[in-house]
Image 1: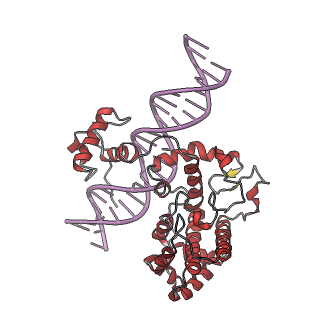
Image 2 (image 1 turned 90 degrees about the horizontal axis):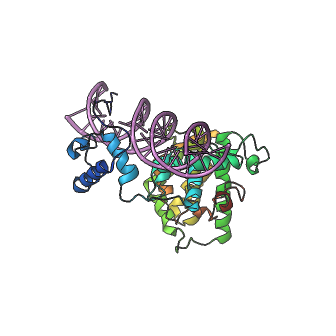
Image 3 (image 1 turned 60 degrees about the vertical axis):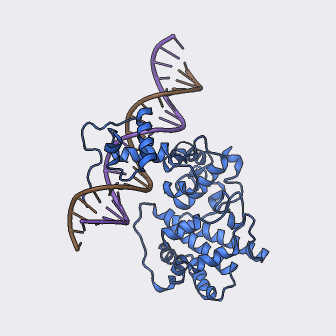
Length: 303
DNA sequence: AATCCACGCAACCGCAGGTCA
DNA sequence: TTGACCTGCGGTTGCGTGGAT
């Protein structure tokens, strides 16, 4: 795969953007849209490479960018999503309207990572660091894949307990609509779940650390399968759900691998789940999805 | 007042994947 | 099927700024 160097031309400007350049870029995009980023600089009269223009636009000039400090809620969400997604900043950013992946990446590297370290939590694995052997997360398994499975299993059981306790359909009014799960199950994603027992392929290559990806996707699909099973009385959902829950609740690495390929669309569907600020709120706990013992990510740690 | 240093943010770099001829 | 082109993403760097000494 050949790839043309982006900024191989001499005479292209680098470094900080001037207000004049910003104006040109904004004016051009407002008039014409960005079209091809590669040709944009020439058309807009900028001595920049297209990549630089795109970055400037997406990270700074875009009108829907929310500027200003992150709120505690946003920070909590970033941490929770990072526990699920790992360093997939774009995916995390997509759940925080107005925030860019760059911004979140910076937030993580400059603030959140340090805070977690101070709390004795390894920011990469979200488990207790060696310096905090008695940390509250020490009860979790040490192998990343096992630990993630355990985390999601814990979340699953929590949700299961809550749902059976309530044994009521999920009510709208800020809560997920019951139909959502049915629709989910009957969707293409649900189809993926239904096919899980038939030897779907697995994607083992990913830029994301294996631990985070394994845990996130397997857990994600587990949750969806469970909820679909519990919240829908649709007859067609019974068998596949049972199958799926069985697969999802398996704690060996095989089931993890099988579920791993539920794909980005699955993840996206979960992340697009209709809730307020906390994507995991449907698991029952509103301030944290409780993969960790209470208080780990409580507000007080991030104020 | 001058210097040093740590921090935060904007921007760059290189890779990966998708599209299209 | 192949390769060029394009975009998006994550990691990293460098500079400006403010606080500490």
